[in-house]
Each structure stands twice: as C-alpha cells, then as structure tokens.
Amino acid sequence: MARLGMLIDLSACVGCAACAVACKMENQVPAGANRLWIREREVGVFPDLTVEFRPEQCNHCENPPCVPVCPTGASYQTQDGLVQVDYNKCIACGACIAACPYDARYIDKKGGYADKCTFCSHRVAKGQQPACVETCPTYARIFGDLDDPNSEISKTLEAAGRQDVLRPDMGTRPKVIYLNAPSKKGLTQEVMES
Ligand code: SF4
Ligand code: SF4
Image (cartoon, rainbow, N blue to C red):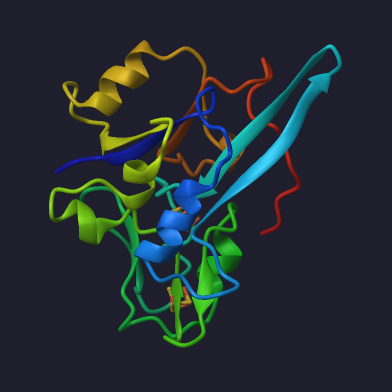
C-alpha cells in the first residue's frame, strides 16, 4: 500500500503548460475540458513583484468530498490513495463536481461519465511516471509514495522550505503539494466555486 502524491515546485514552474498539453494528449481529454491547467497571478507590487505560475489538477485528496456524495459508488478511493471514477457505475449526475472545491472534474459528454486527473494510473501501473511529470522541462514535478521515507517525493518534501496545499480550510487534505510558493503569504487566493 502506498500513499501516492505529487509535489509541484513553484520556484521551478515557468507556466509553459507542457504538462497540461501532455495530459490532454495522453488522456485524450475532450475539447472544452481540462484535467490540468495553469493559473498565473501576479504577486506583490513593484519593485517587489513576481508571478506565481500554478498548475492545478485533482489533488487526490485524502479526505475527498467527491467520494461520499456519489450515489452509485462510482467515485472511489483506492488503497494507494488515488481518487478515481468507475466509468461503468457513473451516471453523470454531477454530484462529485459540485462537491469538489477545486473544480477538478468534468462530465465527459461522449462517454457519459465524470472524469478528471487519474494521476495517470494506467502509466504508473506500468512503472512509468505520470505524463505531466515526465514532460516537465524544469523538473518541477515529483510523483511518488509519500509513505515511503526513501522515495524521492518524501526526501524532497522533508528537505523543502515552504509547503502549501490549496484550500486547507476545506479539510480535504490534498496530496498535490506545492513547494516554494513565490509569495511569503503562500499560495495566491481565489474565489472558489463549489
Ligand atoms: S481535488 Fe476534487 S475531485 Fe480530486 S479528490 Fe479532491 S475533491 Fe475529489
Ligand atoms: S457523476 Fe458519476 S461519479 Fe459523480 S457523483 Fe454522479 S455517479 Fe458518482
């Protein structure tokens, strides 16, 4: 059993969206939907001005509100801590979309089910890295087992300075963890819709 998660080092991310494009291609994400996107915000004022490039996707929350609201059991959590959708059980009611504070899910209209980032579980099962990790030109992303103290992700997390997750107030315990946010105040805020 693992506790799979991802680190995204914001001091390395340049917002090139290579990860988002790789995801789109790898997972054949339909037009108009995204499993991964980049938010860009200015932080501070001149002369202390910087930009936060922040990739966002499903956080594979440890306490995912998208799971208990699902009336069919299609939205579920694996033993390795992935939050997934069983397409055969999904009735596309959208309850999970309403429950996710991160806007991570969409309805795949052609398939007739809810979908989102899977942490590329089909690749991970073959011993490969998620497409977004493999394609990142600045090596801003690290994927792995947060419970394995010898994993790269655990070692990097232990050595890291600033660590943040999105909307910690929601109690979802995200497993996409942002390192080295450019603002001393942490991640830039936004109005979240749920
Ligand atoms: S980010 Fe949203 S879809 Fe992903 S596990 Fe958390 S609540 Fe569920
Ligand atoms: S859209 Fe599918 S996965 Fe989401 S709550 Fe409804 S049945 Fe469950």
